[in-house]
Image (cartoon, rainbow, N blue to C red; front, side, top):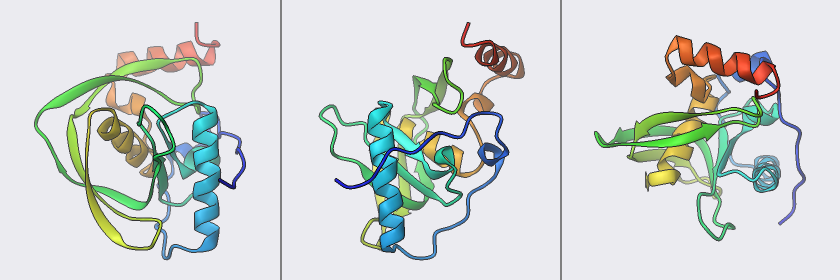
Length: 167
């Protein structure tokens, strides 16, 4: 794979609160950004990455929650089309706010519409950690962070802990 690691935008950078722009077409430049994102995600290591996390303000995300890696799904303009009533709790974190994490409840299964690496609009169902990661990335693309899903008290405590070096 080609690509290079990119630096993370660090909280409270305003780009993390800014909705990303739609991708008009899948071009070689977009594919190169995806390659960089995958290399950056794998180096974390993490199970997903949204373009705004590395300062690219486009609705691009990559997700790879596979055990053996190398199965990253590239998404442009992803949106949740359907979500299950059943939920899962996962510990979520972000390299944009290092040193902290929180248990977040999200739908256990989601159907997501997105434009794939070939430029086709597809629908795919995700479950378990894949579903959590996809939803986490879609939040980033909308200018939201995982801790926005916490109560104000828990969110404030998390941010305070992060700004004191994760203590």
